Length: 184
Ligand code: FES
Image 1 (cartoon, rainbow, N blue to C red):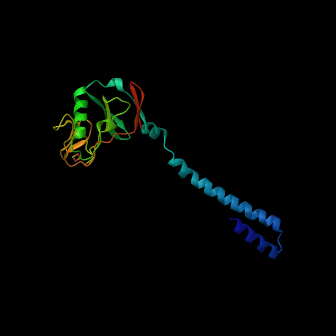
Image 2: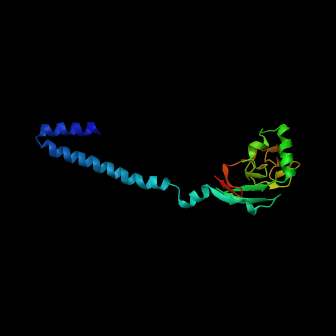
Image 3: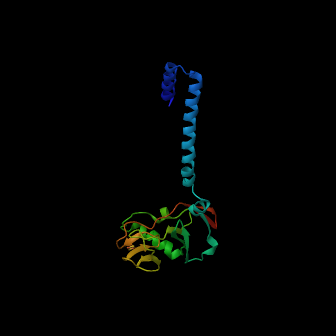
């Protein structure tokens, strides 16, 4: 940009115009063009900012007192179902026992819950095969069963049988208190 201004100024010298005035006109024209680009670019940049709605969905807080032991609540998060499960002692024991099994997607149960609270399991409720929503209580591992093609998950949400390649995904989440989690 500086080269353009310099070159224009020397041409104007040769034609006998007042160089300082013409330089000013050229610089002003360049500045106006830059301003126009800025004005065009802004709406695009502005549109890239997430809306308040999107931000609200990006992370959610969930009150765990809504879930009773042995049950799960399905929460919608980023357009997907999220299973918030309050596991029983039996479910936890089965999940820990599964740590030593031959797992397709090896992961210890302890790595799938947070804050030393094994009773709470939070997973994305989407089968890692082709995206169906598994149901709890089916299959021989006491966890989730996906009716689409028969994938079976255990009480830790780990894939144990069927075509799904991966465990149910544990999303980013944190405990805000003993009874509240923030997901996302
Ligand atoms: Fe779940 Fe195919 S989508 S087994």
